[in-house]
Length: 125
Image 1 (tube, one colour):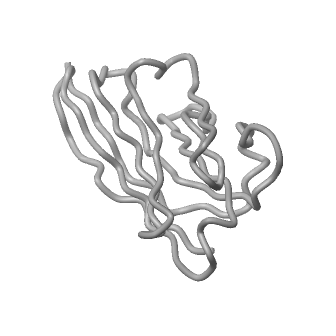
Image 2 (cartoon, rainbow, N blue to C red):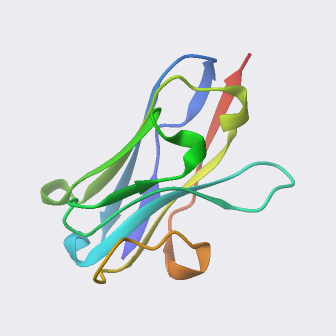
Image 3 (tube, rainbow, N blue to C red):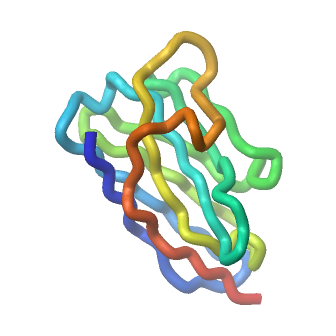
């Protein structure tokens, strides 16, 4: 499966952004999917993940109550709605996919074999 993230940009603290991730090449509903981010000089970190059906979702503590992950399998697209953005949310955001499995979706970087190219989100104070 190929993935392409988009929707990044420069915003002010408190603003909102929605990042789409478009999938192609394989049936997207066969995959769990997630969002990760990487700030300069930092390790890539988990943001949110969603099961193949959309029935199970999990967010990192740092974004709980502000970010929402969702997916539309009919459109082969996953989304990350980001509200109340903070300067510390500044990073390159990547979408990723892994073959669907039982239980909660993967939260480890190593668990995802398929990655999009990333989209830059910059939040000014």
